[in-house]
Amino acid sequence: MSRHHKAIVDYFPHDATASGGRTLYILQSQFGNDGYAFWFKLLELLATSVGHVFDYNNPTDWQFLLAKTLVNEDMANDILKVLASAEAIDSNLYEHKVIWSQNFVDNIADVYKRRQTNLPQKPHCRNPIKDDDWCMQSHYDPDGMNLEGKGFTEREKAIIEKAYAEAYEED
Image (cartoon, rainbow, N blue to C red; front, side, top):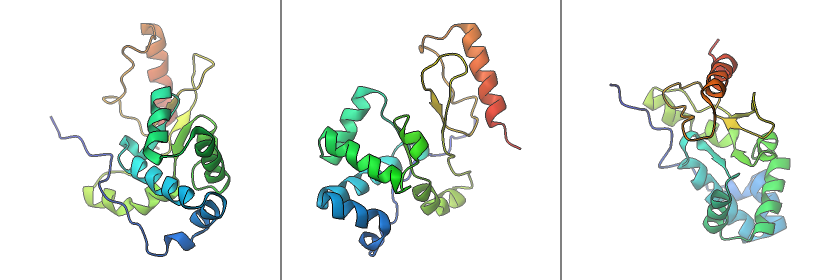
């Protein structure tokens, strides 16, 4: 059995000129140091989240984000809204309570090159069976997809797995 590739990073660059960039300049002007701290704590969270994506649909995950960033719910929502409008995080995924930063992933691409593995890809949100949102990483990993204990029937699992494979098969 082959070893699984890591889909997290232990380090990401924090440039000395980061606060002069557009995203941090906007955050600091609107939220002061809380905006600055929120952004870098969010990047730390993305760095250590598998696939560099954070889904906060679960109330516990939302509470974890608030605790990690040390801001209240209103400020977190306001900051995330600004990050989405500034395109620092994906605005479509943000609407589904999923945080993805393509710039962050691009910034750590060298790590994955050295690991000789593909960069994690942006998740897509859709559900072929239910009306609610269901987000998944866009690279297809049949061994990593676990639908057990999620309330799906065997027929629904087969439909989801087929849709997943068709939607994300490599060209």
